Image 1 (cartoon, rainbow, N blue to C red):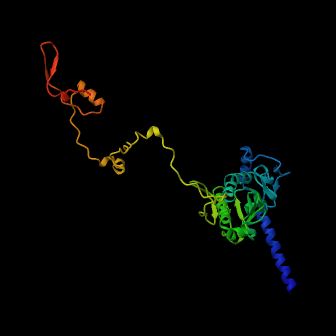
Image 2: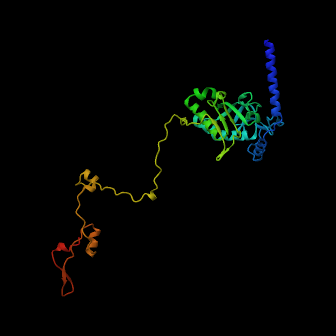
Image 3: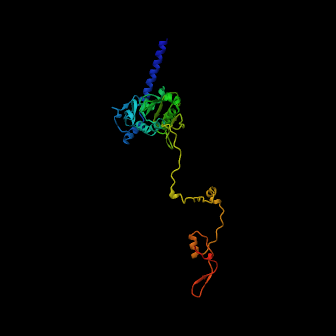
Length: 330
C-alpha cells in the first residue's frame, strides 16, 4: 500500500513537471534582457581581461533561462577582488558589481578596518531555478545571470567576514560594515535582500538588476531590510581626532589693529597703565587757528599758548608786550 502511494506521488510530480515544461517551453525570454546585454557591451561598461572572459557559447534553456552573451568571471576590479569560484554573470551585473566595489565596498573597508576587501565569497550566480527554490514560484533573476548571492568577504590580512555570523554577532564595526555595504547596494541594484529580509536570506545578501517597474524618479528598488544609520568608523592609529581650528586670518581683511595700552611710567602703577581708559583726562580744547607758535608747540606736543601782544617801534622792530614767558619759544 505504501509503495502504491509512493508511485502515485511520483506520477503526480512527473505530470506537474511536464506541465511546467509545456508552460515555459513555449514562452520566450523577454526581449529587454538581450537588449540590456547588448547595450552594456556597446557602451563598453565591462572590459574583457584574464579575469572576465566570454563563455564559449550562449546559454539557451531549459525553458526561458539563459543569457545571450554570458561572462565567466573569476575576479573583479581587474583582479584586485577575487571570487571564491568562477561566476557566470551578464554584462550589466559585472559592471554594477565593479562600481559597487569601487564606490562602496573598498572605501568602507578602508574606513572601518584600514584595508581592502580582496575576495568575495559567492553562494551562487547563474542557476535556472525559481525564486527561493520554491515550487510554483516565478523564475529567479539567477536564471538569467542577473543576480548573485554574497556570503561574505575576505580582507587583505586574511580576516573573513560572513553574513551568517557577523550581521548580528560581529563586533560593532563589523556589523556596521555589512550594513553600510547593504545600504550602498540598495542605491545601485534594484533588488537587495540581506539577513532579516526573510528566512531564505539569513546567511547571505542577494543583489540583482530585476525590472520592478518605474517610478517618477527612476526604476523601482526593493531593499530589505530597510537601510539604517550606523556608527562612525573608528581611527586606526589609536590617536584622538584632530580638534577643530579656525582658518588663518586674512590680514588684508582684518582692518586696523586695536590700540595698544601705554606702558606704565615711573610715576604710575601697573594697574593704571594696564587700563589707560580709567585715567581722568581734561576735556579737549576747542581747535585754535594755526600760527607759527602753535605749529612749533604742536610739534613738541606742548599746549598752544596765547598769541603775545606788541607794537612796532619807530626803528621797525617788533616790541612784544608782557612777560618773557608769554613769547618764549623754548
